[in-house]
Structures are given as structure tokens and as C-alpha cells.
Length: 218
Image: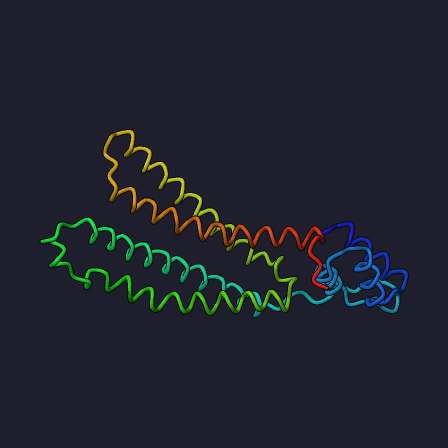
């Protein structure tokens, strides 16, 4: 949130300008409409003595709701990722079995991963859709501390996983033990973490564009 923008709003309120007039001036000056709305919601107006009245802070139950939603998103994303990885690992195992052992291959071995995917993915997809629509209707929520903590936690975990995965592949290669099977398994892990990292990194970039006023939703 721009300190410059906040100071301007406070100065304009003290000059007895209406919120609508302040909003119009700022949008015409190139500020993002969503960011202007966010700033203005922090102020209720002036009291009889001409002192700025801060708006009531976000309700505690809304904060708890956001924590719950983002925690479930994080958990189901983790479950979905592990399930997809396990299924693909089993697939590469199956492909590299000889014809005799492949004939006796049982899909019961991946029943847990499939069940986990069937349960976790719809929940993750539904909550992600809910969060995306909520952000469209309330762009100011992009500045939520809870949301940012969840995103950076995901970025941290995927970064560590990707680094460890690449390190493992290089170590195996230098030892002369790298096989096509182990390479494909490592590629599966890297592909999953890359997709997740790319998606949430793009969310951070969208937040930065909003805050800088380069993205005007009006």
C-alpha cells in the first residue's frame, strides 16, 4: 500500500472532500481503482471536531474464515501433488518392468493415491475457484497477510523440493548411476513443482502490478 496515496487521502479528507471526489481524482491520476477503494475503506470520515475516523478493522470471524480456507487449499494442494506424483511413479515402474512381472502388476498398489486424488483435487479446485472469484469481487484482498503468507510458504516448499530434486539427479549422474527410470521419476517431481511454482509466482506478480497501479480494473 502506497504511503504517498494514504497521505493524500488523509489530506483530502481533512479538506472536507468527499470519498467519491477523492476516488475520482485518484483514478483520473492513474491509480488503480481497486487500490483506491482499499485505501478509502480504511477511513470512515471526519468527526465533529474535524478529526479523521479510522474505519473498523476486519472482523475476527472473517480472519478465521480466511485462515481456514487457505489452510485447506494448502493441504489439498499438497495431497493432490503427492497423489499425482505417486500415480506417475507407479506408471514409470510399470513401464520399466519386464513382460513377466508386468503381467502380475496390480493397480491395488496405487489405490491410496487414486483415492487421495479423487477426494483432495475437487476440494482444492472448488476452493481455488472460490478464492479467485472472491479476489475479483474484492481486489483489496490481494493484500491480505494470510494470503501472502500462504503463497510464499508454497513458493518456499516448491523451491526447496525442486532444488533437492535437481541436486539428487546431478549427484546420481556424477556417480554414474543415473538410469532412464530414475530420471523420469525426477522429471515428474520437477514438472509438478514447476507448475505449482509458476502459478503462485504469477499471483505474486499480479499483486505487484495492482499495488503499483499498473493494472486498472476500472
